[in-house]
Amino acid sequence: MTIAARWLLPDGIEEILPPQAARIESLRRALLDEYQVWGYDLLQPPTAEYLESLLTGVGSDLDLLTFKITDQLNGRLMGLSADRTQQVARMDAHSIPKQGVARYCYCSQILHTKPTNLLSSRNPLQIGAELYGDSGSQSDVEIIALMLRSLEKSGINDVTVDLGHVGIYQALVARMALTEAQQEDLYSLLRQRALPELEQWLSNVDLAQSDKDILIKLPTFAGSVAQIDSWKKELAGAPEAVFTALNYLQSIAEEITHQYPKVTVHLDLAELRDYNYHTGMVFSAFVSEFGQPVARGGRYDHTGEVFGRSRPATGFSCDLKILAMLTVADWSSPAGVLAPADDSEQLKQAIRQLRTQGERVIQLFKDQPYVDELGCDRELVVKDGQWIIQPLITSGKN
Image 1: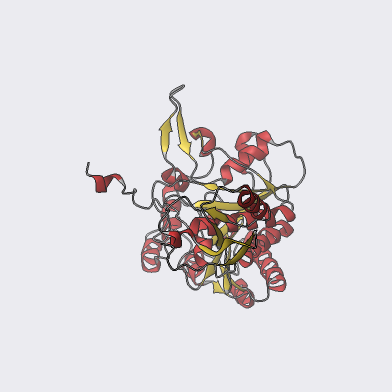
Image 2: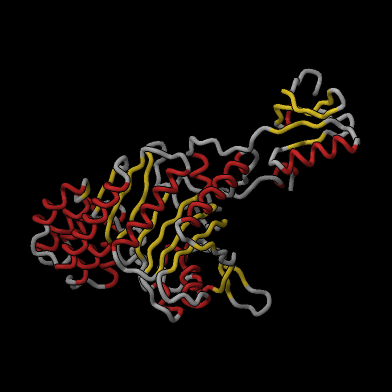
């Protein structure tokens, strides 16, 4: 292996360098502090778990994203976490004794076997919040509001929230006599928005014409909350659960618009992301300068059932690295104070006092070059026997 090859990183694996690392860390602290004042308790799920707990009940998508490794202590298969939500469900069901509503938050790096889209990395820094124990619309509104507050706190503006409800698709398919393979084909075509292929597929399936008409129209039902009434008319004859889901979406959209009037709310009845995982409403946040969701979430009731405790749940997550990249806020470290290479006790005391006050102080070594790389805009100088701070004059320092 050549020297050049030794420092190459795997495709999609990113390192974070100064000053971006400082921006990300500052943003992480700000968001976790925000979650804390909203009542969310910080969790730290483990990096790896046994596969039977890590992947139980979450569908094939997460399975394909998960690195599998062998536990050298007992030979069992483990997985490196590709998403924290399933782990939080296990912790809520098994490790935390709360019986009522519980709120959790987290921030840690996860690992994917492949990028989830063209703009994503394989080692996202996932930050998110989960709410357990309430099945009503208030908890969904709170989670979406917290997601929007996260973007607002990050300095990200001009946000569009896309709302969907997998219950609409579930209710439509439940009354159709489709085989498991046919359901998988239909799901794939709708998820990809492959409308010509969908029309061709439906022509070869034994379904009532009214059901075919609804499935063809479903991807076109996207727009503002004002269009819901017209969609209801076109869905006449659909199961009652479809209209229950539509009313739910309408109430959520109106409340979010009331709380965040500058946010654009968009509805999409054919949004089937993580269909096997989510059980109700799903949502994503978009900004114009990024071609993928910057945050996403939804309802995933009963995820903890496989761990012995079935609870309603809703939550969201995002990649903190993406938020830091998009933010216009200044999350970088402040410029520092340069201290000379002097061993006097008076200088040491002045440095300790400044650091106690939160100042970034960097002391030079003897004959140290490249002073301009240290990021200082002030320096400590002695004047009338006292160490004082003055603007840094860089000429002759490097």
